[in-house]
Length: 233
Image 1 (cartoon, one colour):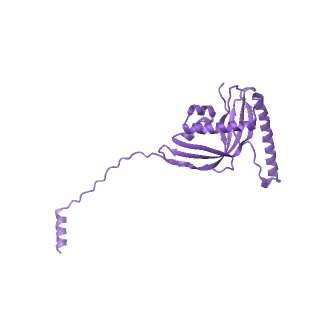
Image 2: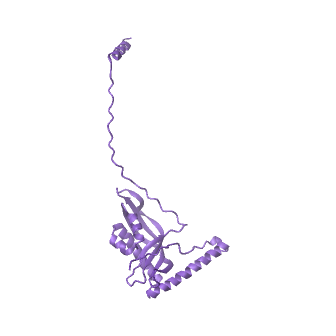
């Protein structure tokens, strides 16, 4: 059966603002948080109908390995491996990050343990054809350096590590016995700072510049006579 990725990917949980905890807005946030949590619990139970051994605490380790292997495959530009690790929706987005660039990436350590923050299931075409999505929060320390096609550094550093907070969505065709978890998307919350822009470089076409010929001064007999007369006076 052809893989049909889930379309809707959104931020699936609510961070409660403590400054509004006792206000109407805070009450609304708490209600949304509990509602999302309840739906996630039901989705996990649905996944266990197809995978009896599924456990969110164990799954985060598998998700972390997929996350690391995907970055390594992207650095090596191993397209076959990337097809195994990311969905059809994510593949062109991942390849676009690698186009005409050289990456140097290294995973150093986890600052916080990865955690499952959300889960969803849905059926496609038929009720028995179930797809599942699980969002995992990663807070890691890593290095990333991006070089352009001319070998110039345009983003990051190979020696300076940075803290990275990401929310990665994993998808699996759970109704398929041979289905595997793959990266489907990344969620960027509104409150996260924007990414550092990449300095774009271009190759300028060679332009032939015609040499400028200096005009030779033309001295007439009248000019010569005037010059001699001025010098004698």
